[in-house]
Image 1 (cartoon, rainbow, N blue to C red):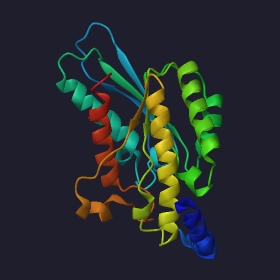
Image 2 (tube, one colour; image 1 turned 90 degrees about the vertical axis):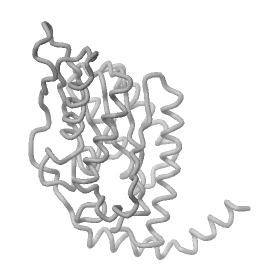
Image 3 (tube, rainbow, N blue to C red; image 1 turned 180 degrees about the horizontal axis):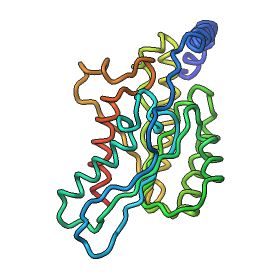
Length: 254
């Protein structure tokens, strides 16, 4: 009964959803990917006799690419690497003497686009792979079955081709909070995002070496500062919070 009422509601609102989606697409501020390096090596302890490298790769869509920032130093990848360097430096028992990080992400990529990207990328050794994907799957209204299939194949190739020991999927963002999305379209996309996010979490829980990470915003009053000027992507402040929490999460098991 509840599903039938929901379907009737969405059917009735369909013209509004369509109109709002067209207006958002027409008026949206399109931010470029930030400039700067997309890979680097950070030294943790140069006094160790041999170099034990932590190979970290960040892949995914515009949020992985750091859209919303002017420079890569403000985005997720470099922030994460810097946070990990600091944490490992303070962790006297760490086995790592250096971190090599790399970023391979593109604005607009869906889970299927990421899967294709992983297939054509050169083979390399990765210990920790961070994956940020899903928003474009929401806007493209991917089916739950196709989402499950894409995520499973992303995991498989990450482990088979790159030898990733730890694969961490970041949760989908709260799309209902995005200033660029008007109501009721924002709630429609939020519902879809929650469905995909639930599936993502369940897949992660069922796979060995695969983890689900959801950053938290402790200060709801600061929500407005967490979005970039386009009202859609994270702000530099949000990337900093995200990277800090993610680094704390990673250092617990690597």
